[in-house]
Image 1 (cartoon, rainbow, N blue to C red):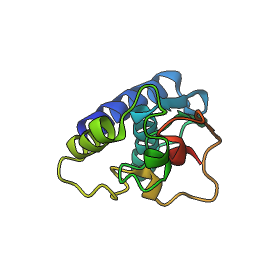
Image 2 (tube, one colour):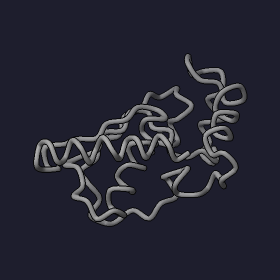
Image 3 (spheres, rainbow, N blue to C red):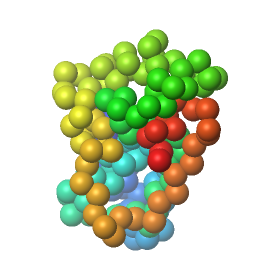
Image 4 (tube, rainbow, N blue to C red):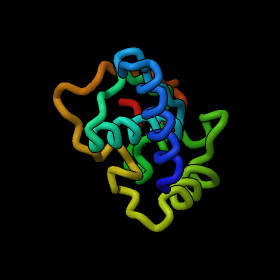
Length: 134
């Protein structure tokens, strides 16, 4: 952290300047990419850039503190993720010593404006990241 967000921001800035309008850009992220998508929106807002037209989050991983119950209650039911063997070590590695509750690490804890962008959030009923989506 924050290399991925910095890279995403550079791409977003280039894309917005190329299409000459952010209202033609939709930011989409799946799993950890959902975290990156929300982080990108945070960074763009902080930088005073025009925001994208919309955001789509597909089973986003936006709470690296694992405060949602699905990380535990759906353990063993998610066909692709393991709480103990993947989510916990990956969260610690990504944070690099920063607090997991930091909005920069877990966008769930960021202040969201009442007029947030049009957003679509999708997830499965047996996914460990279900709590991150509801």
